Image (cartoon, rainbow, N blue to C red; front, side):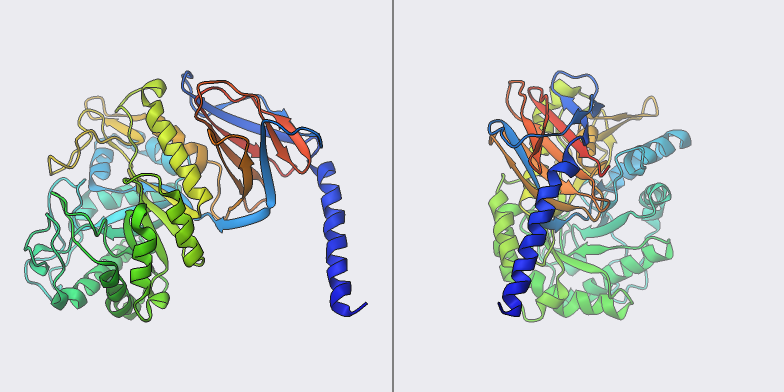
Length: 479
């Protein structure tokens, strides 16, 4: 027997020994369960633990977990530090601000650790603004003083609670004088002669925030580069994004000492993410300049498009940079269940198709108006995971807060998605293995019926009661 055959035989024998010992390791393990259901008053409610038992026979109503299959690494969860959110936060008294920061970013809260900011104004700013005077190509007037009023204090409050908070920034529009339509609204394009200035502008933004002891993990080229909006917007083709990232932004960041800062492209709906990635990555050198691909959820499921993109670019993280919480502002669980189910399904299926991080839109909005916002077309029926009641100087943790918590509170940064399968397409499942070996399973029952499936792991099963219209998080400990 040659050496290679002997080594292969040894590996197979070792795997067989390990496999045969796994049931004994799993038998008797407890599973913690946290449940939210359409008819429940309390979300993320702890249930009675269930216990694994050796069970090689059960075939029906199974949810299978396969830790031996490891996929993408999870980078985090969060939402956007919009000026709207920061302004609402500023209206709360200090003790309520601390409580809200703990609720969002603390270990006893839902543990947000991956959040977004906006460069210049966005649709959820109090009014239009940029950081320089008109025509200042040398950026001598560049100032983030406006951000120091609301946005930066909120970020610092969050960072005080969670120092491991990663941030990325997205622009909605360059200053009007840099664009062909001479407006920050209504789309328009960045004029080619201002590519170098805009690249330095973005680098300067990062530099000024660094002076406030706030570092960034990444930037995106443009929020929604295909959308002509009545609020701040700017149009880019995929090739233009690739060229700007490669020939202008990457060099500007490197020259200013931000070599480790990542660049993401697209930052728009996922139905075109694969095609846009191909366009941007066709630019020579783009593979060294562009780190990841950002996407939103506003144009339908298109989960396969994420998978196809991953198959083309397996080393490029896929980041959901804006998933807008819907639901009734201030409404209860039943009133918001359609939104809860949609959000949970979206998050589960995005993860199952290689998403690495999930970011909600506004951290908080006013419970009455969904704002404030400077463009009357921007807010409408806008909602969020948290609402601020400015009359009573209080905040409300809405149903989408707990929906996000089903994921963000338990799935740690550095976790890997692992293999799973469900007995029904109406029961959505995603599974993860945390760095400490703990397994987290998310289960969404979209049916109107209670069910009693079993969780199956290493030839052992544990009985699960799954209420109709429910979202559950299961924690399988390492003990």
